[in-house]
Length: 76
Image 1 (spheres, rainbow, N blue to C red):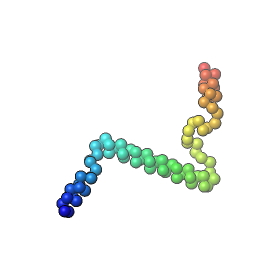
Image 2: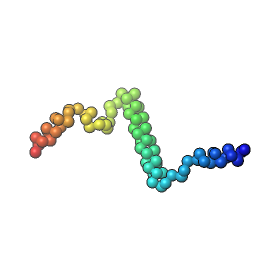
Image 3: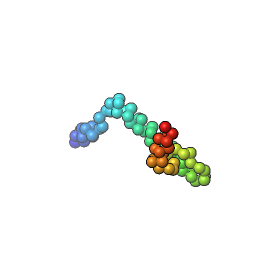
Image 4: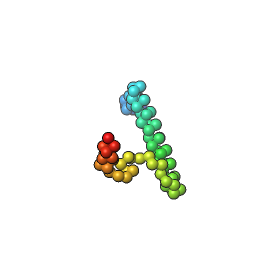
């Protein structure tokens, strides 16, 4: 009976990952660690009352996309 249980457990094992899949997972894990570190730093800065470093979405910097587009076309 134990042999049958062992066979079922072996069948449930995950297949080996290809090199490309392993590299993709490592890159994703690195990005997640980087994101977590950045969020922790932002959280610490907010608690300390410091200004944020300005990294973020360009649209959040103020002004609309139309204004930016107009100023670029006016320069030409």
